[in-house]
Length: 452
Image (cartoon, rainbow, N blue to C red; front, side):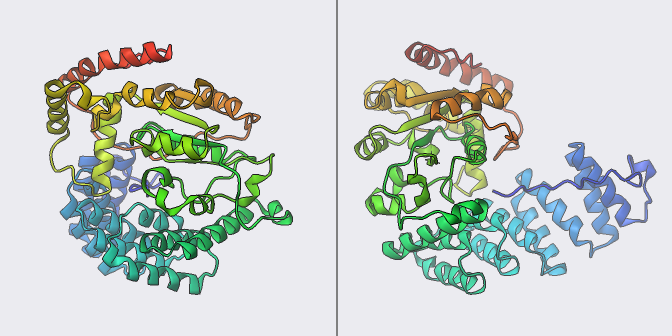
């Protein structure tokens, strides 16, 4: 989504290193010290010094902004909201303030107010991709749809054919039930985005719509590294993705029809030298998706990332909090309840476990996929190995897809969460709970994961 913290990259010698070195009467001096402390991960000290800067200069809008970012990371949502409100009062024309303000509101579950903030940011900067991404990942209630559609149409009046605006308008029209117009938006956004990033493809003949199946699907799992894998594949010169990462067609939109689905893919990828696919990590855990994919595309290649279930559970918890999906109970309370329920009701009810921790018992989900697709159609990756050595993992991925390696690849980390580690005793309990299920997975696949 957005990077909530943007450290000042300056290495100026004028930045004070300690409280003793600062000018006690200068708000700027306290602000610079706080920035340095943020870079050194001294968050509590940075919060105190941003507050001191504000005390000395109540109109220091950036101190309010940076303080809000830290408070948001610490879970102090209302305090963060108040900081952003004050920053916006001082600097009402800065789009990034509305973006972060929207995130804070979304954390509080105030999605309508968050959406209004994101559109205010777009009003100021209508071609900023972060604002469109924030809107994509904020659920829209049906009674807000008319306003959302109107806002996108206003943007397109100013920026005709802008791909991200077309994509998001297509999503809103889909939710409204205007499928034919949505398809037109998706097709147009695909074409515009593709020739913007690959200008040479504008010289080729494009069919109105893609007709053949995608070449591969990254089916999951959630919080296992799919965002990074998608980004690395997207940099390969022979792969063209849809504009949106998670199409969720087989889990949420199958009734829209295959034409709706294929409209998201550049039609030029029907040429044999170009590949396309999608990444919807929710597919792996949703019953029935395996059958629907097999029904339409029985020969498709499937890529699956599997991460230590304990780490995945904690990451998933904070991801849900970030997008305003409840999580009012603590992580420990939720996973403890899941384990109790599993132990009480184990048997047929839990052939498909769901939940933060139980969703990481991969063996029960994987078996039904492998009952439909042949082993040769799967590439199953170890997330921890992918995180440690992405280059080697990507060699395997490219080989699986029949592509040459990408020598220009850069390996940034995408969509990484930032949160405190769990209690050591709780972690040991969760590891012990997952161990027999992980062993079943290792035996089933004939590969070691060594999760602890």
